[in-house]
Image 1 (tube, rainbow, N blue to C red):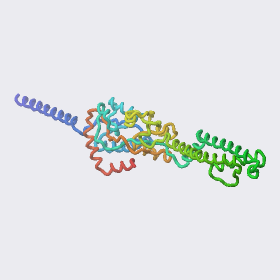
Image 2 (cartoon, helix red, strand yellow):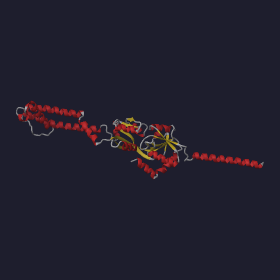
Image 3 (cartoon, helix red, strand yellow):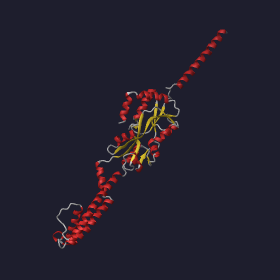
Image 4 (cartoon, one colour):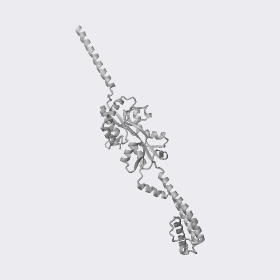
Length: 367
């Protein structure tokens, strides 16, 4: 009887010990910094060089390779989930439909809805504009020479030459017929020729008035010509200069008078709106740059690294990045608010950033 009691007691103690061991293991596992859910959902959106989707639907890019390296160090399985826009992927993280966004600019307005990892990249905003080659500039010069202002000035020049030529011919046709004779048509033609060469200060010397009246008008015409040519030259110069500057974006201050494109929900969009710059929204960087290339907008503002990569790879010679960098910020991995992934991700991220492989990733996508 006593032996049975001891056996039951031993079994009972064994069960209690087994329960304690199992409970402790489960608790420790749940509290372990390295514990990861079965499969993490990683939100991505096409945005080279951060996220690049290949022809065979694989994902690569700076932040994609960074996340793959971090996940490997955490021994965490994951799955990429593509979204159509930045706003859509941010909304999905806020609703906890995904676990991670590998690249996001650190902003105050996101703090209430998400957490950030250790920053791994410093970036800023830049401006993409159409590239203007030599042929394009010459086309603009020729186009401006036939502008309404220039044509009016040329018309006035011809009209005044006609009037002065007729007046001088009237004075000279009798007493200076060897230079202004040969009938009405040729005589007036000689007068206009003299007026033109005198006005342009060429002065061939093949014709000159000899009468008092002709010389008085010649003197008046010479003085008038100096003023007229100076004004005409100034008009052409100012017209070409204004045309050269109009619509040109060389820096941030030029954006106020330009048609500017950007992506809603991005750091660039918020910054431009805050600064009072009128912005035309585009769904993607590619669509915005195509609008710049087709001159539908004057400039497109976005992350410096993204613009430089796309301009070099997709629009070589047709577009350029100008204005330097402004509104600098840090780039981090975005997580759900109060996510248990933050600590293990930071550990893996900090270790990765000390390796040569991280430098290779940076050199591959940032030039």
